[in-house]
Amino acid sequence: MRKNKNRSDQEAVMADELNPPVDPVEPATPAPADPVDPPVDPPADVTPDPAELERLRAALTKANKEAEKNRLRLKEVDDAKLSEIEKARRDAAEAAQELANLRRDSLRQKVALDAGLPAKWVARLHGDDEESLRADALEILADLNKPRTPAPDPSQGPRTNALSEDDQLYESIYGKRKA
Image 1 (cartoon, rainbow, N blue to C red):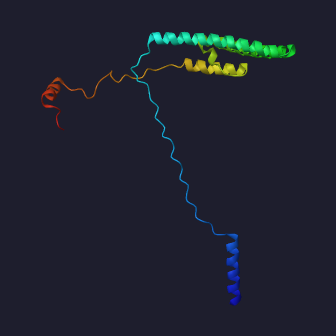
Image 2 (cartoon, rainbow, N blue to C red):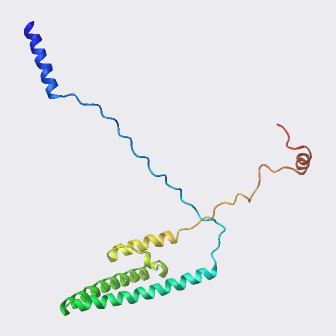
Image 3 (tube, rainbow, N blue to C red):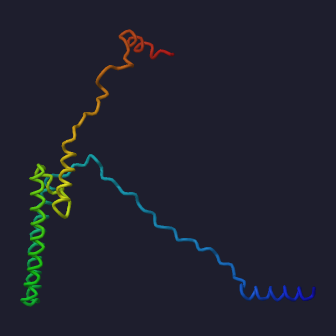
């Protein structure tokens, strides 16, 4: 019995060594988040001033022209830094990209024309090759040519709760009848 007590004391000491006591730690409280203001919708009855719209359009046009001039100046500066071979490579890459875009647009238009798709739907065709473009064109045509049935107008047709003239007169004087 004495051996068992010594053994359990040794096990307790070993367990204390393996699992030392830990001081309790206060739980961290998160900092309160900043309140977010709800989005404010502009009033629905505000109409833009035509003069202000025209002024903004003119400013936008001017800014676009200036941006185009700046792009051209930047290209000139970059060209001055590049060697002739680098310029030719860059121009060739730009031309190849433009050619690929033109070929893709041409193929789209050809497929749309062959399928009988209206011209304004050509830009909506998606696909990497002629077969996928043709399948997309046929799907669009199928959707465009679906017969449409108008939704029923509930204000038309017989009414089940219509009152006779006598009932209307009675209700106008005495109110609705109790069932």
